Image 1 (cartoon, one colour):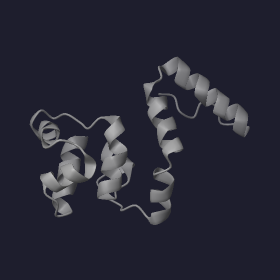
Image 2 (cartoon, one colour; image 1 turned 180 degrees about the vertical axis):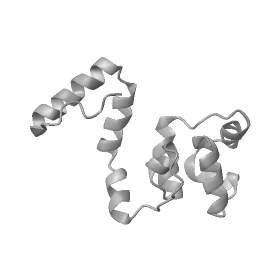
Image 3 (cartoon, one colour; image 1 turned 180 degrees about the horizontal axis):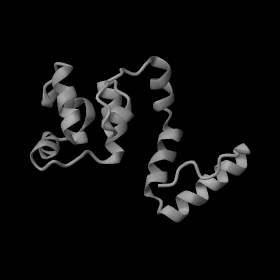
Length: 120
């Protein structure tokens, strides 16, 4: 199941129409249709608003995990922190070399002995 299909399934499970979901997220219904018909996925910049609207863990959407654990309030607060979210979005835009440099910098700042914990 693609991320887009999983989102549409959750919309249905939450008793929302695609129109309601579209109004809450600002994602056009035509875009949602492409998630199912063309097997496309939502863009990374839409992931935050989708998770907030559906109150689901982003890991559930992007993984093959079939358990849908609703977010607790503490996690929602942390996830809604725009600074953290923006760091994640910018990290995803980096090439492998720059990601590794960033990880090295984090290791140095935190005195982390487990080097290169994110080799992607």
